[in-house]
Length: 302
Image (tube, rainbow, N blue to C red):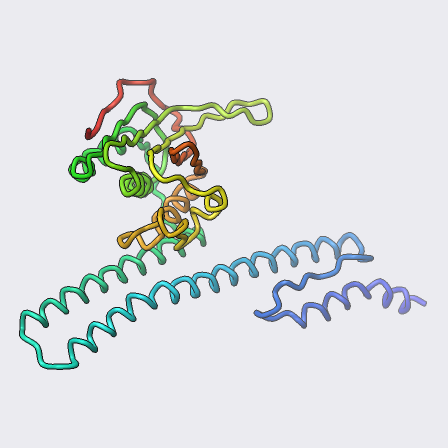
């Protein structure tokens, strides 16, 4: 009688064991059935199912990563092969060979940037980004970038206006890279005579009856709007919104994905809106404890 009771009591565990034996890298969607199991076994099954969900997500990211980089490398590698085959099809002068090599070097540099960006994203998705904690004066970083892009903005007859002041904590260089991606993206899509606006200010979020200090940084620019269905995917790797707003060469469609990864690594959030001929990206970050009050605005290239 005791054996029968034990046999029946262990039945849920035997079912779970049989299900676990069926697991493989190709079948990680399977989950252990907790129905009819005692509380102790249900707790184990819940933890095991959670582990399976994490493994499935990791395998999916790895598969997507491989597919994305294979797809994006196909074009530059094909270009290199074609140019080299044409160059070798007949004897050419040294100047012609030099021109081919210079063109190939550009493709190699593009591939190197793409691989570097993909490795950065892979580290970010696995929580392996180094994150030195320091106080970052966002308006100072933005002002430095405005000066950096000033010549390009003047060449394109685009103005840049910066206003506001706020502090956050994190990696200064990574945060500058995130803002640089947004600013260069805005410059590519702002028509001549338009003005890019960068606004930085403190905000208070009310959660559970408590105020939580945040910093909001927005980059707005006039130009061709992003379709609503594209806004949901604008931060995906290699996404090209209608073939117009994504990277046209230098960024390989990774700039916004990198920006999002940096922001998330800093405990923040990023969103985009596009309507009435104006596109706006908004980054929200935790506020530094010793944030200063508002100071005069900076004005960039006109």
